[in-house]
Amino acid sequence: MSASKGGGVITGMQDLSWWKHAVVYQIYPRSFQDSNGDGVGDLAGIRSRLDYLVELGIDAIWISPIFPSPMADFGYDVADYCGIEPIFGTMEDFDQLLQEVHRRGLRLILDFVPNHTSDQHPWFIASRSSRENPKRDWYIWRDQPNNWQSHFGGSAWEFDEKTRQYYLHEFLKEQPDLNWRNPAVKAAMFDALRFWLRKGVDGFRVDVMWLMIKDDEFRDNPPNPGYAIGQGSRAQFLPIYDADRPEIHALVAEMRGVLEEFGDRVLIGEIYLPIARLMDYYGQKLQGANLPFNFHLLQCAWTVDELARTIREYMAAIPPGAWPNWVLGNHDQSRIASRIGVQKARAAALLLLSLPGTLTIYNGEELGMQNVLIRPEEVQDPAEKRQPGIGMGRDPERTPMPWNSSPLCGFTSGNPWLPIGDANRDVNVQASRTNPDSMLSLYQRLLRLRRQEPVLVSGQLTEMSAADGLLTFLRTDASGHIRFAMNLAEEAREVSVAAGTVVACTDLQRDGEHVAGTLNLQPAEALLIKMTN
Ligand code: NOJ
Image 1 (cartoon, rainbow, N blue to C red):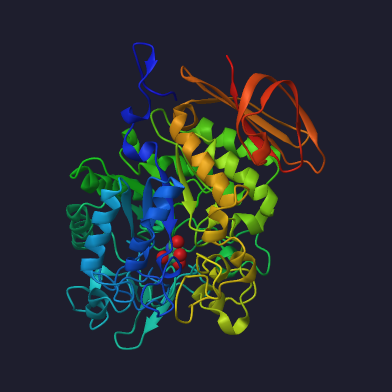
Image 2 (spheres, rainbow, N blue to C red):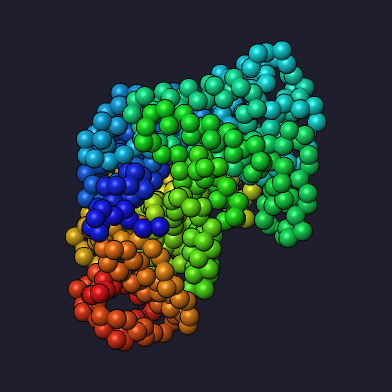
């Protein structure tokens, strides 16, 4: 992979589709900014913070679901694919937000939840009303359940008293799975995509893309020999028949086709699969997802050996012409600063911003936000409520953004739906902005650098080495060479480097330092050196 060239001169990132050089910023709308004092974030709140995002230096926003929803799974239970949930505002608010986003040269990506609807969606209400209802086959009904388990624990089948059959729900019973083998479902859902595309949204993040099609014979999943008590009921079985079925790829290609009707939009798939399986989601002739989300940095142990192995394996597996992407966190995963510690999270920011392709940052990551301890009486997440105490809860990483040092951190004037968390007060935007050593300032510098140095986006990644707690690699193209080095050892380490200048470092004091020969790196220190030749 290398940047496009014209007559020996790098023409740079303007030759790439916008989403290829974009840094996407994920907004969890309930926790970003409340504008009306109900303790829950909303669209007007997001609009009021757009200048912050411009200042940060991201390119696109992905907003987790904002559609009408009973909120059984906080918006991932959609009751109308073409509306706006009143708690978040109105369609007018949305239109205004989209306009304001575009006016600032940013892009807007919505969250599409195709695997399941809310049980309050009119389609499901009709479907469950009688076996003869024309919408019956829009969902998955069976006389007998098989052994498939919900991702939130317990059987994935719910018995419906009225019509005396079971319906499938891979998540909550309030989230019945749609039957994507029914062409009418496909047509209706694709029309919902068109509704937003016509408005001008720039793409979709597709929820649980790898789950959308299930085995047509409903075979039982085989037992998981590696299962250990405490991993949740789903882990008892290997997800052979209710996930990642071969038919999914034709469906994803059709979905991509809908986006193609509208030009340069992006299709991002949420897919938790091993690297080899993940790659199939780029599709035949790359007509699948533009970006099958790469969650492997979320899952790998934070050691240089594991990081190098993961990065190498992922890059080697990317099909020719396909585009890589990287993520350190999202609303379902423990925050990076809690997972690896605040100091190493700074180094992780440097690593992320040095990797090739499209990046996604989860709101608050740029501040160094940590997981918030949630007391039992504060629990909101249905995953935690169904399987308490085994680490399934996602509230800790979903807490409100701290904007300033006031008691409610400027998030709301009301009662925040989740606690703010003491550790996160200190990293509030107002304080971070004026502190050159803050995580926010580091992210800002790194985002600026990535725009200035297209080699970081699209140059080759070579010369990777991991030894003795040190990870190094080179990003290179005709525009220049930038070396990355990170020390994850407990003691200082030396790296030998050719002559160059430090263009970013976890330690601000080193920015601009000229280096040649031996370089000393403190524990959790990472830097980027622009090589002289
Ligand atoms: C993945 C989403 O990211 C998660 O938050 C949600 O609970 C499930 N899909 C079900 O939609």
